[in-house]
Length: 66
Image (cartoon, rainbow, N blue to C red; front, side):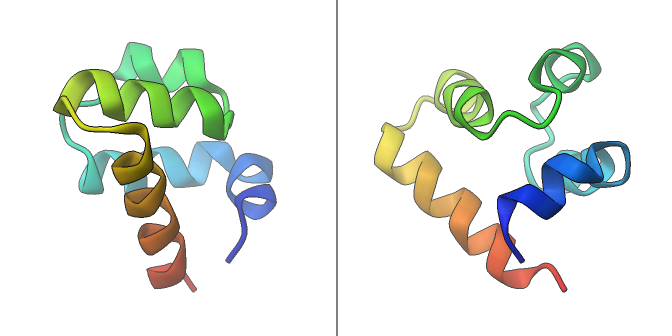
């Protein structure tokens, strides 16, 4: 799956993102509105990880979505 599919179906994917990254709030999800770069930043902020790690986690997550 690619990010265009996620952003195009943002409402459906918000719940799946929250399952993976439970520290993201509803407010975070509303602000992100499908923007991958902002998601990377929020994951970095909430989980205290490097940008590369957040990018890798998102890519790995996308690989598991069908």
